[in-house]
Structure formats: C-alpha cells, structure tokens
Length: 158
Image (tube, rainbow, N blue to C red; front, side):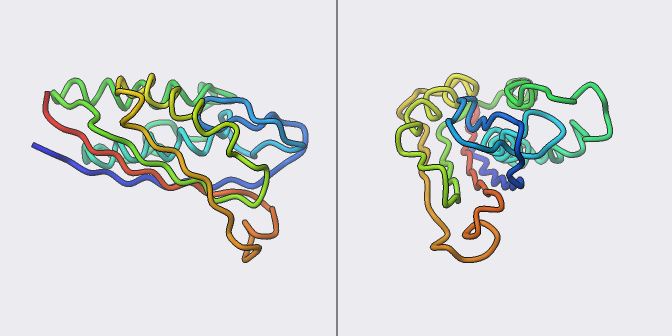
C-alpha cells in the first residue's frame, strides 16, 4: 500500500520572533506570525502526513483557538501525525519540501532542515529533500511579506 499526501502552509513575516523552518533556527531580521512557533515547513509536512492518512488537517487537530498550542514547538505536530501513521502501520518512504521565499537565503540551512525532518518522520536522511525557490519578486512572497511551503509525503505500509 502507498499513500501520497500534500501539505501547504504560509505565514507573514513579523518583527520580534525568531524564524524557525524545518525545526532549524534561521538567521533573519523577522520571524513568522502564528499561534505556535509558526514553523511553516513542519506545518506543511504535518498536513502532508495527515493528508496521506485522510486524517484531517493541522487546523482541525491543533487549532489556533486552543491555548495549549500557543508558541508550541511544531515538532509536536509532526510527532502526533506520525503516531497516527504508525497506528495505521504506515512509515514514510520519502518527503519532498519546497520553500518559496525571497529572503532569507536558505541554501546554508537546507541540509540541517532535511536531517531534522527525517528525524521527526523516522525516515532515512537521504529520503528527505528540502528545496528553496524565490518567487521572482512577484506577489506577497516577492515583496518579502512572508513565505510559503509545499510538502509531499509518501507513506507505505510497514
């Protein structure tokens, strides 16, 4: 059995918060607005796993109206999604992430992000890909108002 899930997340940049992507702190003048730590990468990965399981989405499971998730480490969301996957006998075969951002430059961080995502998914490091693309100065991302992330996950049984 194979199941594919797709996740997406986006957040605006705000002053006064650290920027955390893929569980890695990124040097940047601004962080992301959000109820939790606003790690858009881990949010997209969580939604991809939940999608593959047909188990709803991150907003249903970890609503921003619930004080328990205020400033929460988004690794908790991935861990819960993986607990659900394990309960269904599923493991991650691979994960592919694309980050859309004009700034900061993410090249120096991609490997560490991939390693952390692999750790959270219980997957081999070589099965996780993190890519960073600009939006060629178009739209809100191009104006550096925020960033967006897309993630795909392939789950297999056992």
